[in-house]
Image 1 (tube, rainbow, N blue to C red):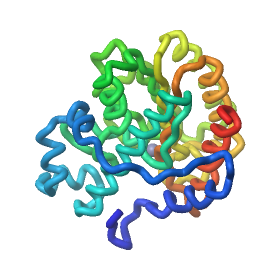
Image 2 (image 1 turned 135 degrees about the vertical axis):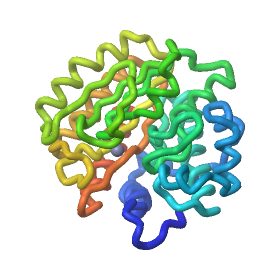
Image 3 (image 1 turned 120 degrees about the horizontal axis):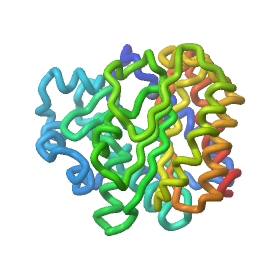
Image 4 (image 1 turned 60 degrees about the horizontal axis):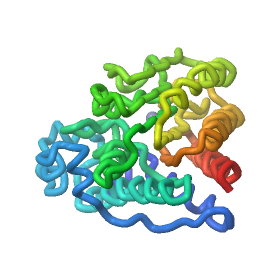
Length: 285
Ligand SMILES: [Zn+2]
């Protein structure tokens, strides 16, 4: 993705995850198509989209994204968003679709933030609506950072339910209002986290969404260097099992997106991510 070698974002996790799942006959792993700029412009300010594509963002706007701008970053960003769109298509056809990247939920209407250029969830919802489909959508965002961009983009939209589980004392420090926010203190473990999940999930199905997006970030893992929570691998697996079995029995299309993970060593993040996708395979397989 064209990052300088000393950049702190663990970009190699994507390849490691793909390698971990390759060879498992339950997965059909396809290269991401490149770009549906029309859908991106439906979800974002067209001027912002243009400036990013052309490398014309201000230095402050680039710093807020957190990646140095390069033509490779543009390609990577388009591939990431298009992966979410392709996963959405797959979910519409078969009930399930997943992307091995994405979940870029900090991006808002006219700016990127926190390693997110475009909000792939919002772009995918825009893509559905451009086809006249998917009127009510639920976004289940269990990444440890608040889904502030998604919250802002759909704050006034009664047909999109945004749910965010996140660390109280973590980025973004200025939280936005999701439709449902659950904030956890530092060091929260599996038991408290899963109890909250059991309490809140029924509200998602009660909303009667036609489509469900799951941002499955694993940065709540104890080994994560940014997360501040203390979830275990077993706890995260249980989290995914509860979300996905409930979604499966609810019965509407479900899209799985990767989200964050910054463990040291990064192998712990990749293991948790791979477990999420394997759980999806066993639930929908
Ligand atoms: Zn995160």
